[in-house]
Image (cartoon, rainbow, N blue to C red; front, side, top):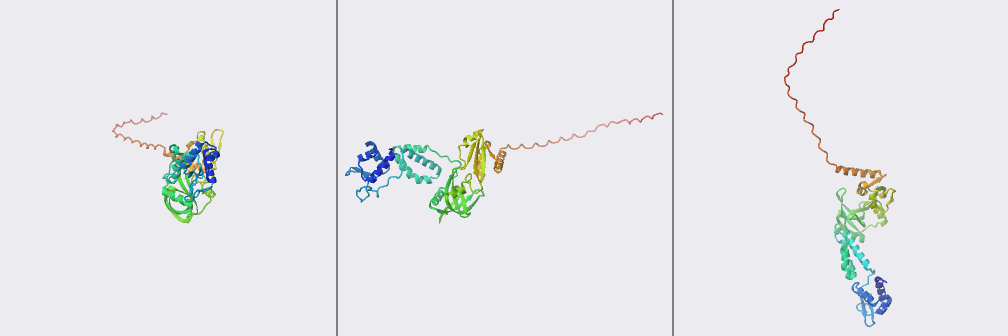
Length: 371
């Protein structure tokens, strides 16, 4: 058995028997004396397990509670610190530390990280001599946020706490589309991290419906004593996640059909644009992707990102929207028109000069015809 299994087995034996000799432990675990000594030392030093050697009984047991004396099976359970309910292998500890580093990359102000710091210290302690290696591994993981919009930590903590305690929150919220602030009372339902930005899914009591709020647009927040209204997760998903993008709900869904050229298809075919997307490869190497959407703004932005490597099929409103934006973008890069050429200045006429008028001799009279 591996070390994790041995730890479980040692705990079980000491809990059930009360006091177990070294030889009995070694026989049960089928390990060498050196291995058993290392396991016991690790449990004491790294896991803070209150395992003591009892000279009178020549065995190992959990330390007894103060004032309770030495007991039989289960002795010391009242005072001793419980052994952790989960045991991790060295590889699992490394994985957890790496996960913490990933989380820290999403946690701008350290709101989550500072609450998890004791756990990280414990995990590093479990690695013992390999703690330095664990810290080095954490530095080898980096999260790069693209176009990140930072949410104030005070709002993040308050909203997260209200979400867990099922309390309502008063918000002063700035709506960018019309550049106006409004006051709302909401029941938090879910925190969402999407494209490097945090959002709050909540029931808005003013509009009597589910809404999604960007945390960086929250100007002020205050917890309220009233209980939050509960919305089932399946209803949240149906209302807010059915369509494409961060504002994917609230409208009748349509299906966009996107055809990507062969070069772009090598990347797009590995991406998930929507959990319900449908796709197929064409015989000529192109790739066809179908995604549901309700509001076209974000989908159009992602289609435009691929330029002339993608074509929207069949959906005339979406085609017109993208075509208009492409035309406006192209017009913005047109060189300025050259100024119109000035009309040529007419050359002034030369002054008239006196000229001799020729004197013409009168025409000769026609000679009379003699009859």
